[in-house]
Length: 194
Ligand SMILES: Cc1cc2nc3c(=O)[nH]c(=O)nc-3n(C[C@H](O)[C@H](O)[C@H](O)COP(=O)(O)O)c2cc1C
Image (cartoon, rainbow, N blue to C red; front, side, top):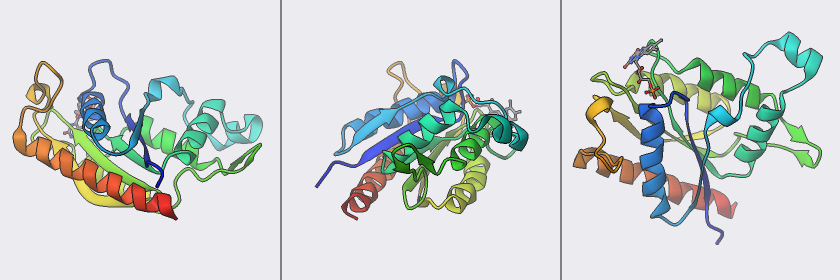
Protein backbone atom coordinates (compact mmCIF):
# COMPACT_ATOMS: atom_id res chain seq x y z
CA UNK A 1 0.00 0.00 0.00
CA UNK A 2 1.33 3.47 -0.86
CA UNK A 3 1.58 5.98 1.94
CA UNK A 4 -1.24 8.57 1.81
CA UNK A 5 -0.15 12.10 0.93
CA UNK A 6 -1.66 14.95 2.90
CA UNK A 7 -1.33 18.63 1.99
CA UNK A 8 -1.71 21.16 4.79
CA UNK A 9 -2.05 24.93 4.68
CA UNK A 10 -3.49 27.90 6.56
CA UNK A 11 -6.03 30.42 5.31
CA UNK A 12 -3.93 33.22 6.84
CA UNK A 13 -0.55 34.55 5.75
CA UNK A 14 -0.21 36.89 8.75
CA UNK A 15 3.23 36.56 10.33
CA UNK A 16 1.94 35.52 13.77
CA UNK A 17 -1.16 33.72 12.49
CA UNK A 18 -2.72 31.40 15.07
CA UNK A 19 -4.05 29.24 12.24
CA UNK A 20 -0.60 28.87 10.73
CA UNK A 21 0.66 27.86 14.20
CA UNK A 22 -2.19 25.34 14.45
CA UNK A 23 -1.30 24.02 10.99
CA UNK A 24 2.28 23.66 12.27
CA UNK A 25 1.08 21.63 15.25
CA UNK A 26 -1.11 19.44 13.00
CA UNK A 27 1.93 18.86 10.77
CA UNK A 28 3.87 17.60 13.81
CA UNK A 29 1.03 15.26 14.79
CA UNK A 30 0.68 13.92 11.24
CA UNK A 31 4.43 13.41 10.91
CA UNK A 32 4.15 10.77 13.69
CA UNK A 33 1.63 8.85 11.59
CA UNK A 34 1.85 6.67 8.53
CA UNK A 35 1.52 9.38 5.89
CA UNK A 36 3.53 11.90 3.86
CA UNK A 37 2.82 15.49 4.86
CA UNK A 38 3.46 18.53 2.70
CA UNK A 39 3.00 21.90 4.37
CA UNK A 40 2.71 25.00 2.20
CA UNK A 41 2.07 28.71 2.75
CA UNK A 42 -0.40 30.52 0.54
CA UNK A 43 2.06 33.44 0.70
CA UNK A 44 4.04 31.51 -1.91
CA UNK A 45 1.01 31.41 -4.24
CA UNK A 46 0.12 35.04 -4.74
CA UNK A 47 -3.15 35.40 -6.61
CA UNK A 48 -5.20 38.41 -7.75
CA UNK A 49 -8.83 38.63 -6.62
CA UNK A 50 -10.81 36.39 -8.97
CA UNK A 51 -12.32 38.30 -11.89
CA UNK A 52 -13.81 36.53 -14.89
CA UNK A 53 -12.53 39.23 -17.25
CA UNK A 54 -8.99 38.68 -15.99
CA UNK A 55 -9.35 34.94 -16.55
CA UNK A 56 -10.72 35.53 -20.08
CA UNK A 57 -7.87 37.89 -20.94
CA UNK A 58 -4.90 36.25 -19.24
CA UNK A 59 -6.05 32.74 -18.28
CA UNK A 60 -5.68 31.16 -14.86
CA UNK A 61 -2.59 32.51 -13.05
CA UNK A 62 0.46 30.27 -12.77
CA UNK A 63 0.18 30.11 -8.97
CA UNK A 64 -3.35 28.70 -9.21
CA UNK A 65 -2.22 26.10 -11.76
CA UNK A 66 0.69 25.14 -9.48
CA UNK A 67 -1.65 24.80 -6.50
CA UNK A 68 -4.17 22.75 -8.51
CA UNK A 69 -1.39 20.36 -9.50
CA UNK A 70 -0.27 20.09 -5.88
CA UNK A 71 -3.85 19.38 -4.70
CA UNK A 72 -4.14 16.79 -7.49
CA UNK A 73 -0.96 15.06 -6.30
CA UNK A 74 -2.27 14.62 -2.74
CA UNK A 75 -4.99 12.36 -1.34
CA UNK A 76 -6.24 14.77 1.28
CA UNK A 77 -6.15 18.41 2.34
CA UNK A 78 -5.97 19.69 5.90
CA UNK A 79 -7.00 23.35 6.05
CA UNK A 80 -6.58 25.72 9.01
CA UNK A 81 -9.31 28.28 8.47
CA UNK A 82 -9.40 31.60 10.36
CA UNK A 83 -12.78 33.19 11.06
CA UNK A 84 -13.62 36.60 9.61
CA UNK A 85 -17.14 37.83 10.37
CA UNK A 86 -18.46 34.35 10.91
CA UNK A 87 -17.01 33.09 7.66
CA UNK A 88 -13.75 32.15 5.94
CA UNK A 89 -11.01 34.55 4.87
CA UNK A 90 -10.95 36.26 1.47
CA UNK A 91 -7.53 34.67 0.95
CA UNK A 92 -8.93 31.17 1.40
CA UNK A 93 -12.06 31.55 -0.73
CA UNK A 94 -10.10 33.32 -3.48
CA UNK A 95 -7.56 30.49 -3.52
CA UNK A 96 -10.27 27.80 -3.58
CA UNK A 97 -12.09 29.65 -6.38
CA UNK A 98 -9.04 30.11 -8.60
CA UNK A 99 -7.97 26.48 -8.14
CA UNK A 100 -11.49 25.34 -9.07
CA UNK A 101 -10.91 26.90 -12.50
CA UNK A 102 -8.17 24.37 -13.30
CA UNK A 103 -9.23 21.07 -14.85
CA UNK A 104 -6.22 20.08 -16.92
CA UNK A 105 -2.59 20.79 -17.66
CA UNK A 106 -0.27 19.83 -20.53
CA UNK A 107 -0.10 16.27 -19.23
CA UNK A 108 -3.86 15.67 -18.95
CA UNK A 109 -6.81 16.12 -16.60
CA UNK A 110 -6.25 17.67 -13.17
CA UNK A 111 -8.61 16.91 -10.33
CA UNK A 112 -7.76 19.25 -7.46
CA UNK A 113 -10.75 18.42 -5.27
CA UNK A 114 -13.11 15.71 -6.50
CA UNK A 115 -13.26 12.58 -4.32
CA UNK A 116 -10.41 13.69 -2.06
CA UNK A 117 -10.70 13.90 1.70
CA UNK A 118 -10.56 17.18 3.60
CA UNK A 119 -10.19 18.01 7.26
CA UNK A 120 -10.75 21.43 8.80
CA UNK A 121 -9.19 23.06 11.86
CA UNK A 122 -9.48 26.61 13.20
CA UNK A 123 -8.05 28.89 15.86
CA UNK A 124 -9.40 32.22 17.03
CA UNK A 125 -8.68 34.58 19.92
CA UNK A 126 -12.43 34.45 20.60
CA UNK A 127 -14.17 31.86 22.77
CA UNK A 128 -15.75 29.91 19.91
CA UNK A 129 -12.44 29.04 18.25
CA UNK A 130 -13.52 29.78 14.68
CA UNK A 131 -16.35 27.23 14.60
CA UNK A 132 -18.48 29.46 12.32
CA UNK A 133 -15.66 29.58 9.80
CA UNK A 134 -15.67 25.78 9.62
CA UNK A 135 -19.47 25.73 9.32
CA UNK A 136 -19.09 27.90 6.19
CA UNK A 137 -16.09 26.03 4.82
CA UNK A 138 -17.66 22.56 5.04
CA UNK A 139 -20.36 23.10 2.37
CA UNK A 140 -17.89 24.87 0.08
CA UNK A 141 -15.49 21.93 0.18
CA UNK A 142 -18.40 19.49 -0.29
CA UNK A 143 -19.63 21.50 -3.25
CA UNK A 144 -16.14 21.19 -4.74
CA UNK A 145 -16.54 17.41 -4.52
CA UNK A 146 -14.43 16.82 -1.43
CA UNK A 147 -15.29 14.33 1.30
CA UNK A 148 -15.04 16.42 4.45
CA UNK A 149 -14.46 14.28 7.53
CA UNK A 150 -16.75 14.84 10.50
CA UNK A 151 -13.94 15.44 12.99
CA UNK A 152 -12.86 19.07 13.35
CA UNK A 153 -10.68 21.05 15.73
CA UNK A 154 -11.52 24.52 17.05
CA UNK A 155 -9.17 26.34 19.41
CA UNK A 156 -10.56 29.31 21.33
CA UNK A 157 -8.38 31.79 23.23
CA UNK A 158 -5.71 31.03 20.65
CA UNK A 159 -3.30 33.72 21.90
CA UNK A 160 -2.62 31.61 25.01
CA UNK A 161 -3.23 28.15 23.55
CA UNK A 162 0.33 27.18 22.56
CA UNK A 163 3.34 26.44 24.75
CA UNK A 164 6.93 27.49 24.06
CA UNK A 165 7.37 24.46 21.78
CA UNK A 166 4.33 25.54 19.71
CA UNK A 167 2.34 22.56 20.99
CA UNK A 168 -1.25 22.92 22.18
CA UNK A 169 -1.26 23.24 25.96
CA UNK A 170 -4.67 21.69 26.51
CA UNK A 171 -4.68 17.88 26.66
CA UNK A 172 -8.26 17.55 25.41
CA UNK A 173 -7.44 19.70 22.37
CA UNK A 174 -4.35 17.60 21.67
CA UNK A 175 -6.50 14.45 21.80
CA UNK A 176 -9.09 15.94 19.45
CA UNK A 177 -6.30 16.86 17.01
CA UNK A 178 -4.85 13.38 17.31
CA UNK A 179 -8.24 11.81 16.49
CA UNK A 180 -8.76 14.11 13.52
CA UNK A 181 -5.33 13.31 12.10
CA UNK A 182 -5.80 9.55 12.61
CA UNK A 183 -9.18 9.64 10.90
CA UNK A 184 -7.80 11.65 7.96
CA UNK A 185 -4.83 9.31 7.48
CA UNK A 186 -7.04 6.21 7.64
CA UNK A 187 -9.48 7.60 5.08
CA UNK A 188 -6.77 8.92 2.78
CA UNK A 189 -5.16 5.46 2.84
CA UNK A 190 -8.43 3.89 1.72
CA UNK A 191 -8.75 6.51 -1.02
CA UNK A 192 -5.28 5.56 -2.09
CA UNK A 193 -6.38 1.99 -2.77
CA UNK A 194 -8.99 3.05 -5.28
C1 LIG B 1 -12.19 41.24 9.37
C2 LIG B 1 -12.09 40.38 10.59
C3 LIG B 1 -13.21 39.75 11.06
C4 LIG B 1 -13.13 38.90 12.18
N1 LIG B 1 -14.25 38.22 12.57
C5 LIG B 1 -14.15 37.28 13.53
C6 LIG B 1 -15.26 36.45 13.87
O1 LIG B 1 -16.33 36.54 13.31
N2 LIG B 1 -15.08 35.51 14.82
C7 LIG B 1 -13.87 35.34 15.47
O2 LIG B 1 -13.77 34.45 16.32
N3 LIG B 1 -12.81 36.12 15.18
C8 LIG B 1 -12.92 37.08 14.22
N4 LIG B 1 -11.84 37.86 13.90
C9 LIG B 1 -10.59 37.69 14.66
C10 LIG B 1 -9.72 36.64 13.99
O3 LIG B 1 -10.16 35.36 14.38
C11 LIG B 1 -8.28 36.88 14.43
O4 LIG B 1 -7.81 38.08 13.85
C12 LIG B 1 -7.39 35.71 14.09
O5 LIG B 1 -6.16 35.93 14.73
C13 LIG B 1 -7.21 35.56 12.58
O6 LIG B 1 -6.54 34.37 12.28
P1 LIG B 1 -4.94 34.28 12.17
O7 LIG B 1 -4.38 34.54 13.54
O8 LIG B 1 -4.70 32.90 11.71
O9 LIG B 1 -4.47 35.33 11.18
C14 LIG B 1 -11.90 38.72 12.83
C15 LIG B 1 -10.77 39.40 12.34
C16 LIG B 1 -10.86 40.19 11.24
C17 LIG B 1 -9.60 40.88 10.73
